[in-house]
Length: 103
Image 1 (cartoon, rainbow, N blue to C red):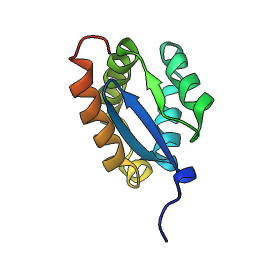
Image 2 (cartoon, rainbow, N blue to C red):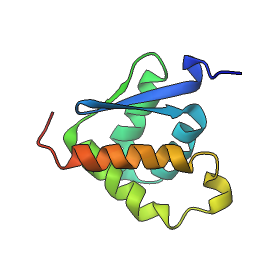
Image 3 (cartoon, rainbow, N blue to C red):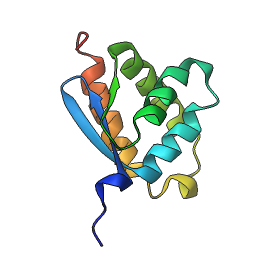
């Protein structure tokens, strides 16, 4: 069965948009919630749901990339198995957009 748009979330990263399954979004937010510095990013994801893309500012993209890269090695493989590829797509897009000036 094909995934419905309500099962996915989109994030606008500068000029790029990345789509994640809801489970990947949940896994990402579980990693971000304990970090006070990531509260604005968590709030953005929670505020929009699937109704529209999450729009992250340049500084938020840079911070999110740093967290994903720092925590990637510390996440258990079993817990991330269904989401690993999706978070890698997000990570690649963040790398590309984090280097760009503010968009």
